[in-house]
Image 1 (cartoon, rainbow, N blue to C red):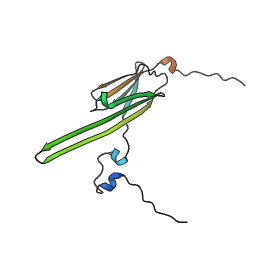
Image 2 (image 1 turned 60 degrees about the horizontal axis):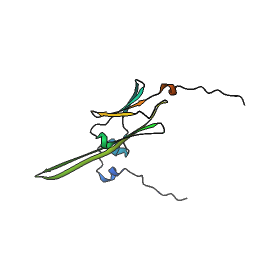
Image 3 (image 1 turned 45 degrees about the horizontal axis):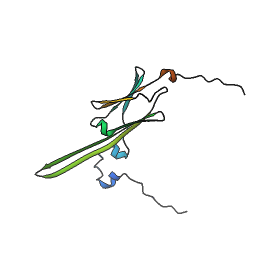
Image 4 (image 1 turned 90 degrees about the horizontal axis):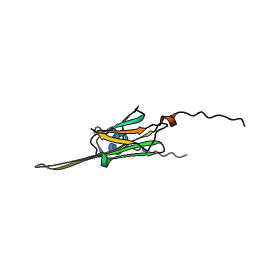
Length: 143
């Protein structure tokens, strides 16, 4: 039997930087897309979902979809700064996407979902039909 030694695959930031020059964020360290933090609660017969999304344009950067009783929230943040002075020209940009999928409760109706964006907070309100949300008892017949 012959064994070969395989090298572990290291993140890209490890090989291109000095050992103690750590990544700028946990997402860069872990190599994953950050999960969007949300708050959800029920109010006046509706499920309310709030997501903190400061500094985005809701018309351009937010996508809200519902498919198979799953609410999908996705946002993309882009920013760019340019500086030009005697020392030279500097351009810096940051971008990233955030997403979250939430299972809708029983009785949630997709027909009248409303979304608003105010002061960096996206709020989605989903009506819940309490008549269809109740559990139904299924009788068992003898065969």
